Length: 277
Image (cartoon, rainbow, N blue to C red; front, side, top):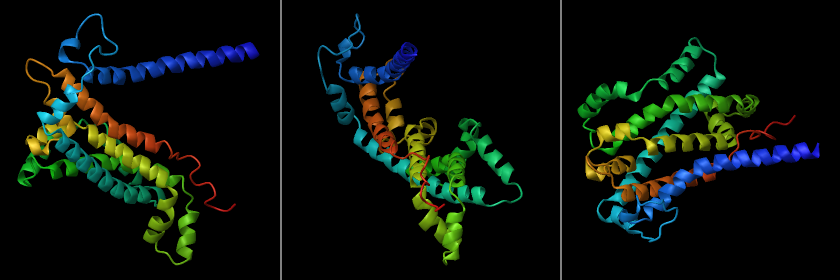
């Protein structure tokens, strides 16, 4: 039994180690490429660590482009869209979780169906709408579209979180004189703060990485987001791999920090002790 246990433990370590290598190596290679001079990027044999270390690629993306502005634009768009979609999803998710009404299942099904529809199908009407609203090449256009995009999925996530919260919590608060809305914001939301945080991070990351719509609606230099700026490093006959790698490393840092922060928020067991047995 001990030998079988040791063999099983060793197998798990090997499998997990291979998986970790498979997932981390691309990030490592991008980081190494960002530190190489252009002449050493495609030399053979491959250099797994640059012989000549340089930070020119990082200097160049700030020197030849307004990369700092792109980062700020992405932060503003992702944060605003994430917050608005989260606020709407909290209210709609609560309604779907707590109330029974005709057509409820159809609404949930419609929310799920929207996640299966390619976004480019709605590109033409969205473009005409943004043009009539005079929002083309402006950040509010992305904020509005991203918010609408994220609401259905965030609502489904929030519905699942609300269903894990005993309804006796808000019922007790309402007996004590709270309205349903007051009970929601003062009693339920503090309890499910980890789930809310995880949902916001999901929405933020999706908005942060979105490229297709950003390219279609943003063309002015001062309004570009990071994905649009990185796409500009690809020309007709060449790709600036050094600048692309450096920009990728910088764009990954905020999402890594968010996911590291989200690890503390485990949804399971978040209502323990909320209701006395």
